Each structure stands twice: as structure tokens, then as C-alpha cells.
Length: 152
Image (tube, rainbow, N blue to C red; front, side):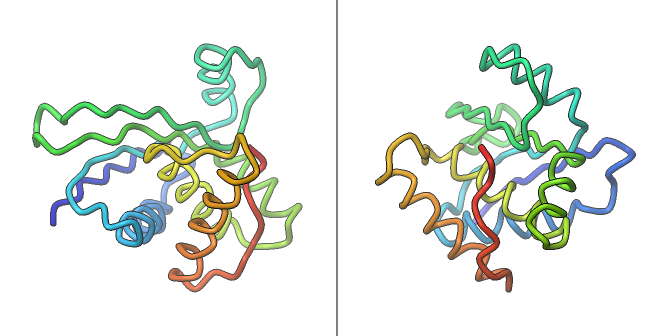
């Protein structure tokens, strides 16, 4: 089993690396993904607004963006799932609004992003139900109760 999880963090948001890695491991293990790589970036609202505008045509920040790859990592030759960007300030606001710790919101957004990299979406009621079910199971494995879905 080889998982390569890279967590890149803007200096203002250091300290969440292990939590993000644990959330990635929880959902990947749950879905029996054992050989893969991915990158998670914890950053600010402005960077997510920029990428959201550039890649989704929406000129506003968002909580999480996923960029699936499907190509092998040239350094490890592992299947590279892609990149996830999380806006920590937005995550913090959402955690306050929902009444739970930022750590739980970051776990949720990480799991949500990984599911998108693996092809899950929430465009139909059935797809949303499958995705939300996987999120809830992964969160539960981390000791987190159902904290609700992401705003995406």
C-alpha cells in the first residue's frame, strides 16, 4: 500500500497538516484506494476565488475546489488523483455557522474534495445521497458526528 499525500499550507494556516492527512487516509481506506497520490492545499479565500473564476467561471470564493488528474505522478509512478484547494477562512466561517470546530469542517472539506477526485458528485439526488453517505461514514471513522454537508 502506497499513498502519497502532500499537504501544502500557506504560512498563516500551519498546524492542520496531520488532520488533513488523516481525513485523506480515512476516505481512501474506506474506498479501498491503496496506491495513489494527491495534494491538498490549505490557503486563503482570494486564491480560491481566483481558481474558481479561472476554472469554473464563477467570480467568488468557495470552500473547496477539486482538480482531478488521472495521470500518473512522474516522480512516483503512482496514479495521481489530483489537487484539492481549501479556503481556511471560509471553512472557519462555516464551522462557526454550523456550531462545530474548525478541525471538523476541515476534515469534511478534505473528504469532500477527495470524493470529487474519485468521481463522486452531487448534481443529482442519487449522486448526492451516495456522496453524502460516504462523507458521513468517513467522518464517523474519525470520531466526528454528522456535521452536515459542505456548501458546495
